[in-house]
Figure 1 (cartoon, rainbow, N blue to C red):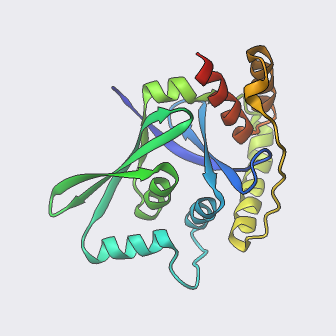
Figure 2: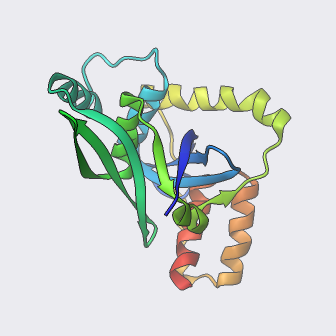
Length: 207
């Protein structure tokens, strides 16, 4: 199975799940986006790692792991998102010490937070991207003019822990598939990645 390298596109607010965010990954040589729902703590940790100039006064959990690994000469070489089951992504951290390679199972959010700190590449398999990837038509002018400012603002708010999350309860299991497909198109068009991921996962369960 061929691997596809991913970049971090940004972090989106959750409009449907209290305390949750969507981490947006983008294929390096393509247009598909892979939204992954993560918790607030992991979103904050990833945001801090993305914002190079921000350093917390005390090490966060992922920073502690990085310090521990550095002390004992453990290198994180890459992260692979290797499985998708019922909307849950499974990842592996590929580590090396004394030229011996080890594979460690990890939550995808933790694995990516560590990959950022080790400057390690992130990959997934092509079949996972085929199954869960979302195509998004981006307006270049809008993206170049406002995306950086929007993502920077989100990082600032995550770091300061002052984010207000809107909770909106919808039982997707009760909706017909045609309605879910319509909602998925609307979510993608409005760039609500987290909502699109939730709807996509519910549709995939019915296939």
